[in-house]
Length: 439
Image (tube, rainbow, N blue to C red; front, side, top):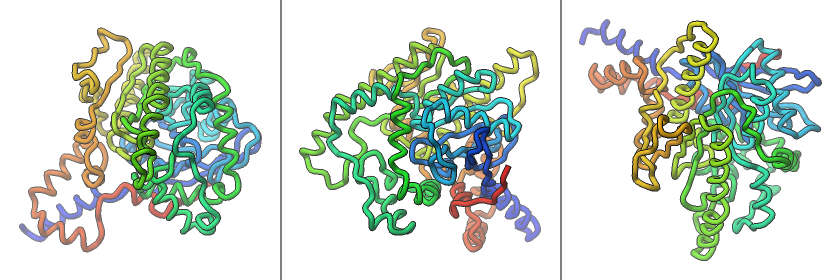
């Protein structure tokens, strides 16, 4: 191959595979004077706002967010009492929803696709109910749960593996705390050792000081969310609810004995699984048109475990909601960059019954259960996700694949490795910090 042509191909590969720029770090002042920390990945198109779950910060989305910027502007917000955001005296979902509203006003954003993980589901429900004209769509990332029911079950059943906080030695330095978080899959409710990534490390660094001083506040956030059952009936926006499910208790230590494993699995079967099913039924009754995706044998932080798959689901849902809104309001739909994966490409096999799921024509609730084997194929291995560079259905990703396999790949590979130009989305947050802008 002529040297000039090879150089052009090599430059093309570097351009396509280069990691996206790090997010811009911002601080927005709310109407009551509090400072909220947020990360802005930029992007083009409508805005997706990501809300972290309890004890997590905006950095937990460092794996997911860059995969959405091809079609959307993406920002993530750290709630009060977490990370670098200010303190709070109001722990209610209503207060958190007002904070999101204030951030949108400060940034001049009219409508958003709002996604939230875990306890942030209560904030999604509250925001969409209070501000329907600001809500383009909702995406619950293992977050559409009845927290009041959970609190009642917690009072009636004892978790066989009680949570253990980090020791004083583990909180003595950021390094020791990171080591604790990396192996914490042995503790219930926090299994990050199984899904350790640059996003989890950046989130842990951001939350280190809070973990030492204000962990008691986390319980107040949960108590406020559990004060009442979720009211989905007032939501007007399209809903996507992703549920991560496991067949066994997911937080056992690797060295757990047979008796502890039996008790834990009994607890999962008698308490956790029925609560999940009840939460799904509750959402389905209130919102028959909601799209419900169940992903068996996945972890609670499913968007960290399978970021590309979850990004495709989010992009597809948000693009469909934007098109539907444009038709209703009589304006042309904004065409997002890239191509979202259509919902029809998702598996529609019922893993429990082994039969095809009902279509939207036979049931107004679009509920899909993705079998674990199919889920693994669609999600792909982490290294394959990173090398594809985002949505595998986009033309750029296909071009990269063709070039990398057909045009002097052996020579290009050694050159690429020699300069470290590999396609890692997680590099965007490897340092845990971007540039800072105060607004």
